[in-house]
Length: 181
Image 1: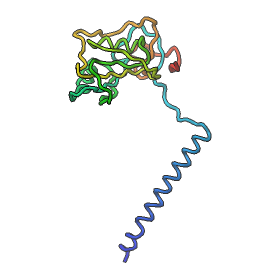
Image 2: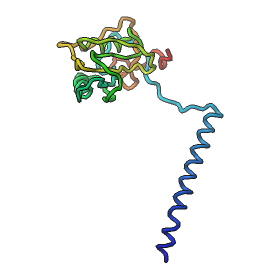
Image 3: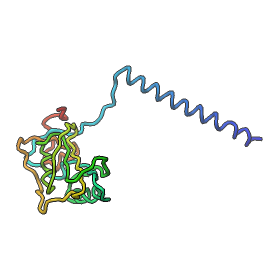
């Protein structure tokens, strides 16, 4: 008799719990819209005075836009072994032949540095605020140059680097807050 009662109560109890979760989510979403509150996100990067960038100061994501399996993974492994911060590898729906480097601006130090590692690379800018760099590799396979530069001289002396890389940038305090450009 006890099992029959338990079996009959499982569904209504689960329904009430799920309804409570749904109601809380609805209330919380409504509260955020009405009050205009936004979650506080950490600064994506910090502008610092730095003479040169090293691979350990650049955050990259590598995407495969070709038909060959493993292009992004292989390129990501090579860049990671060189010291770059490889945050993810995966696929893109965009069909890519030669390598495409996507970043904040075409003349950003991190974009120029990453592009200097590839034999054929087209640079695209999308104004991203975190100054990370996406590398889209394709049929050409993301061919790296034979002797890539181990650092990049920053012409302006200012670069936006991930906050956790400040010690390796040779800087201990930022010159400005996160770049809102």
